[in-house]
Image 1: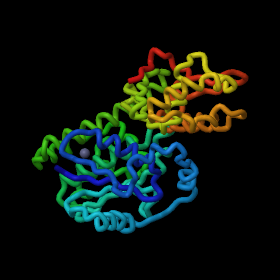
Image 2 (image 1 turned 180 degrees about the vertical axis):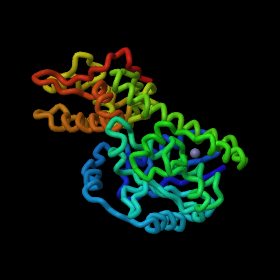
Image 3 (image 1 turned 135 degrees about the vertical axis):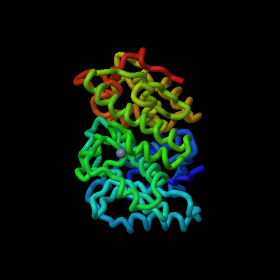
Length: 352
Ligand SMILES: [Zn+2]
């Protein structure tokens, strides 16, 4: 079993961290991903998780050196008495002086992956947590194939060929590497000679394949105007999109109940009529939380500031996870002088 801890610094949004961790922890094999002990696990239950915090994050660029980044990993090791053989990945919102996406400290088993600026290369349609997962798996592979940092550097391809060992001197070349999520024949031969465990390789390739499919699929879906299924799970407070690589969005209870309410009315809902739907909303809320829903009362109040805010938070999640084009089918849309509605055909919707 290979133990891999995923941690973040204060510049990495909690939500992105959670998205990355969720994808990694779903992968099966001998790599065991371990959640950061610094985080409160169910903070996503907080309905008023402030988005202001997130805005502050992107305000200015922070530059750190490689050793400053690795020091964060080492401090974590010390604090939680992490075994030296365990691997620690720091997801950082900071830039580094050398302008690398990610790197490893071979002997200390420390790594960092920069989580910001991916939109420069992948655009708003690609969820960045996929790219970050790719990077993590790529470093674990390199750590296992090569016996030193020098050996890694000796084996890189300076000219990009769509292999994990592409150096990507031009940062934009990373898109080729991730869209192929592959190894060239030369690197495959190298792996064969090293006698690496099948389970380890299988876990890496399976996750890569998911990432690759997802990225290419989204680009095509956008192009073809493709609609996919959405599965609502009130108990887990998740919306899952199985046709979009299994993307999962978690909503806090009020948002979840409110989303279900709009899903239940194909023709949409006028804010002025929310009051009439009080009982139904409370039923949804009860199924999620077991609470009677008295805290929902301000939702029905004119001028509907609370209702608007809930919708904008839900829509923000949709855009961020699905990209703006795909999200347009699932967002709660405001129609001028009309009701708010969700346009996806209800034949695509199921509740579990
Ligand atoms: Zn190669």
